[in-house]
Length: 237
Image (cartoon, rainbow, N blue to C red; front, side, top):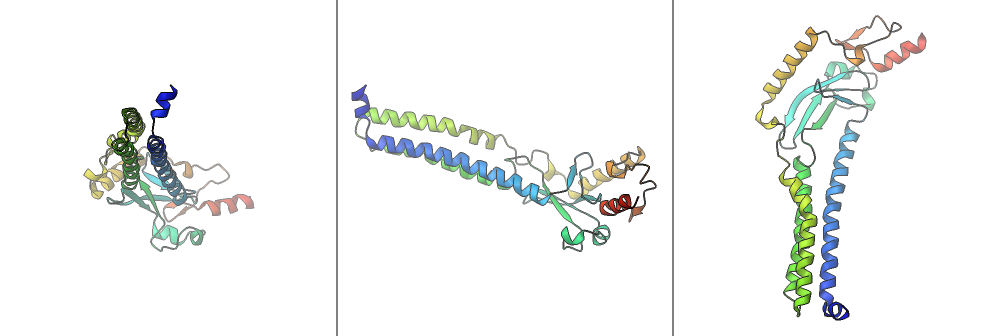
């Protein structure tokens, strides 16, 4: 056993350690990119609640932001509130500086299907390839066959460790929900049909349901009154 360990040359240990470090770096890149992606989405939509059944956002002032456009390059669906409503909002200064209404974006792809996520996942996969190549190249520089076998074994282990990165990337479709195959007009038409069906059923949104203290509910520009005004009314009661 001692003779076997003694036959392993120093470059083998260096190449093996470097390969392990590269695999850890690859997973670190992917993990940090995912966390940054999630943190960025949460920061941009802080205080807003997305309602999947209506494909719309509800802001802290009980106003709705509806689909406005789709950005195929960044794979983002953009939602915007009514300019008339947003410009008369009592908390507009702390919400947006735009006079065209507050805008909120939503990525339509799950990680790592979005363009940005696939880019960072691609970098991680490239690093994992280097982790495999390095011990293979080093195998041609060592003198004895024992060191070569060890390096080959390290390359196989490192390749297996990096397979999940490649597998997830390969099985993540670029357009899982078929958004690119629908025009914006088609999406808006579907939303309009859904809204009409919803109105026929007379389904009330949670923001429209008020207690007897709040009834009757005054409307502001066709929407429910602002949350800040409702709080003042409750305090006066």
